Image 1: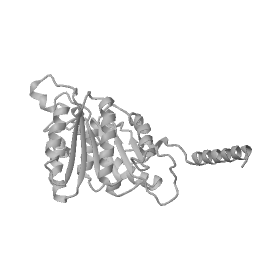
Image 2: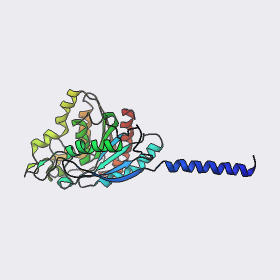
Image 3: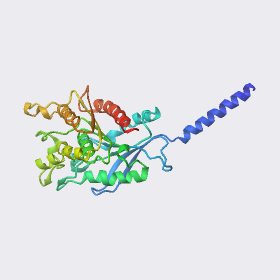
Image 4: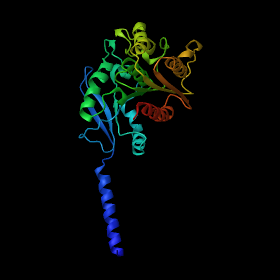
Length: 300
């Protein structure tokens, strides 16, 4: 073979390689909206590289919930991490849904609120949004194919959804969770915006107790459905200056949550305390580790 022939062959190989890469579309972050019982639900949608509407493959699903006062765009920072993990083969191609939660002044705690200005957020996300995503983007509908995650208020929502609806989710990533027990401290946003209210009352003790995780554990045990929960918090989370409310500090609540769940039958639970406070320097590495931890246990 001559030098010219070799160069021509190398050029052809490079052209073919470029064509293959071009055919594999990069990952996408799309703005989407669906109708629901709570009104329109806006969400960011992560589609992996090469996502196609055709074929039999169904994508595992991440449902990611932002914190109080935040917006759906907050979770988009993890898109490059998902790209890297999928490209490396550490995760299969998956779809991530990041809903916006503007209801109750962005303090609705992802529950069906009975407050006069509240909305049925839990119903909207689980029974309106998820089925429409599954139908349109071919996500998996089995519990082993779904993980719910969230930070702060979203950590509350992720924990509640996993415990109240274990038939929908096989695992939860619970980051700096605002899961105060038995009741939130007086300065908590859980009391301020009507998520746990009724009528004109912004907060009702009985509603909060009924919806929070201690009340959900007996039902989970009765159903006997295995669940994986990854809990994380920072070692510099906000410290309440009132000693009487120190046990409601988020790092303390995370330890208590772990202690309770790790003693609950069929709940495989992990706890991590990272250096940092109530922010992404804690949540991003915790999400990374927790996602791999949960995906491995679900067989992804």
